[in-house]
Length: 352
Ligand SMILES: C[S@@+](CC[C@H](N)C(=O)[O-])C[C@H]1O[C@@H](n2cnc3c(N)ncnc32)[C@H](O)[C@@H]1O
Image: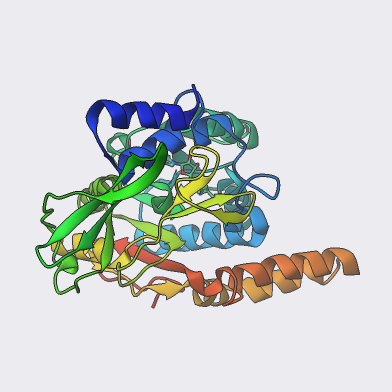
């Protein structure tokens, strides 16, 4: 059955649905869900992520993880967990780099939290020579210090939206009008539990993802008990105000309610909310950095130089264009933000 028909059936049966329910069906429907049924990533998919653009991204994250491990984790093995690994490209580049600079003298333990069976198959193929295990619940993380990497993960989780009126916050829901899907505001008043949503104006929209809050809080608790670090790189909305939900199909923006299940749906991560959750748990939160500054401090220009100095002109130009796409402020350089969470204040490369 087409997803639009399924959504309309649910609405006809039980009334307007929340945006997170709408996103969940569009992205994860068993039969026709976006992540369940489509090739989503890469130039031939609908969107492309930093590790898919340039190998330098995963390489630098690998070196960042190794440096954190060498400075702060005095354990036998280096445990890296990636949340939502896509095709596994970041990990492949990171592992290759870590093994190279340590002359393979490191005990690496890799975990992937992944929901898509299709992507798990691709990840298994891409990482077949590595020591990787998969989990489907963040609570199953192994009980030891983890270096947790989340690149474009939290933006992919379902979110709700609320709009402020004189009476309070009303949830924005999806309903049917004249046979078509459309938005409506719920009459009930929603009371936010987090203080970052206070002091906002009538007419403001905010987004709140229970899934993000739950996964993020679990990771914070893991860090409190087992040390380690969470590195988040994502589309950032530092203020947390505004409607950032977007649909992307074949690298172009579409309407969120158009052709459900055919487009990627994502929303900007509310970094202020993440900071509030972590600070309530007395964790250290690094300053929020733009991707450009983070990658430049990690040495992306030097890596570019070493990749291009002996390459022919065509390859050198391609590699140069790819790296520029990651750091150009008009492209991913400033739209993407980086933050890290640790147990106590630490000197974190690229984030000081
Ligand atoms: C936008 S892609 C990013 C992929 C990868 N990190 C990259 O940079 O190329 C989002 C990833 O998160 C996964 N994902 C989304 N929701 C998830 C959930 N609730 N639990 C686990 N994985 C999830 C998707 O299947 C996909 O692998």
